[in-house]
Amino acid sequence: DGAVSASKLLQGAVTSIALADGAVGEKALGVGSVTAHAIADGAVSASKLLKGSVTAEALSESAVGFIADKVLTHKAEAIFGEVDSAGRVLRGGGYGVDRAGGAGAYVLKFRLPFTEKPVIIVTAQGYGVCYAPSHEVQLDSAVVRCLSDLLTAAPVETNLDFSFYAGVSHWAEQSVAG
Image 1: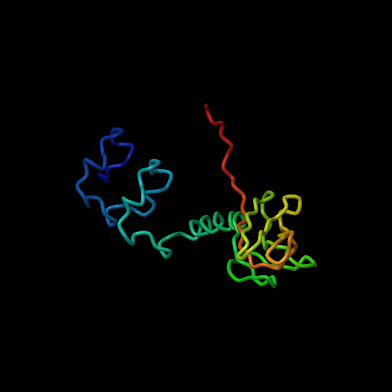
Image 2: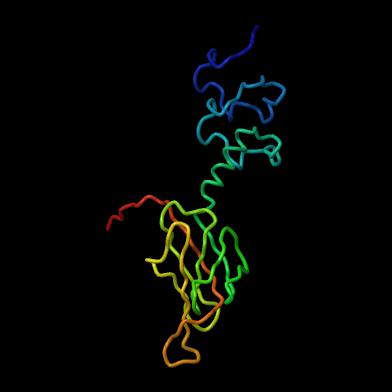
């Protein structure tokens, strides 16, 4: 048959430096001759791909499924948005808002629960302060409280527009050498 196979070549005999640009094209390769298992780590990078060579149509169903699974798995790990003083969602997604009774109290309800208790950062969009007490933060919800002393001598619960970020970091803890 005269074909050159990997088993007939010495290791390292054929490198990208030894091949002329374009010497091995699509027509020269047999179906299934190049697999993810046969490619060395780091051999293919975004800078080495021809523009337009990887398209949604060119990806196999399993590749698209793998990517979608990774995106969906992490979707609930960060949510941010903006809420008006009446408790209506102005921007963002993946959450809803209920009033928690009384002025200045809101409940953020996350459509997908977090994998662990999220960190919540809240910023008032007017004169006042909004915060999420840590004891009122759950995997699927968080209470936000807003206060202002604009018209009073001491802060009182007040309906305010606010923006928020809710997220979980999956970075492994690393010790810092000092």
